[in-house]
Length: 182
View 1 (cartoon, rainbow, N blue to C red):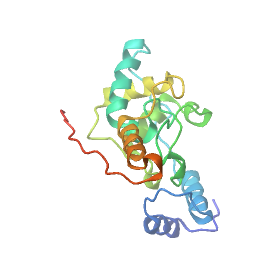
View 2: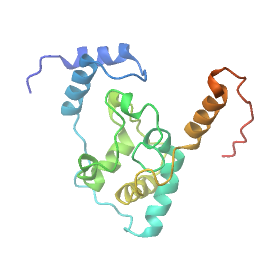
View 3: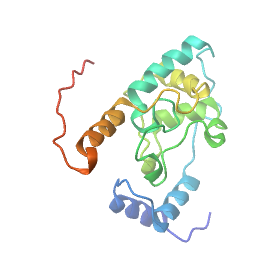
């Protein structure tokens, strides 16, 4: 493949660009497109050993909510994720034809290995194979866009922002404690 931008220069450019939540510029968009074309997604011939049942999709959804919703939204379609469209490349909407056209094994490979500078982390060593395969089952049966609302962390931030800017004047934001149990 011929390229006008060497891969090493692209990686350096992305490294210095950082993870900022603003519209990607022309150089960022070009670099991200180049990398996406160079990255090879493995797993095409891997077969999903998890039966395609409502129970498997439900359990996959539970794993998805725990690990993936912060970037992909509760519905896998970026609902309520304020930075999703502003990343370079944008956070993938998992309902799109591009994503749904991947084989199950390719989706599992992406979950396992991530996609380099896109921001998609690899979950190998964090999630078990069975959990990743069940997430794939969830991705195949996503709920309707917006039906689950925004992730709580973003909903809470929006509510706090509203309280802070009521009636055009600044107020003191509320504070509270989170009770995290894992």
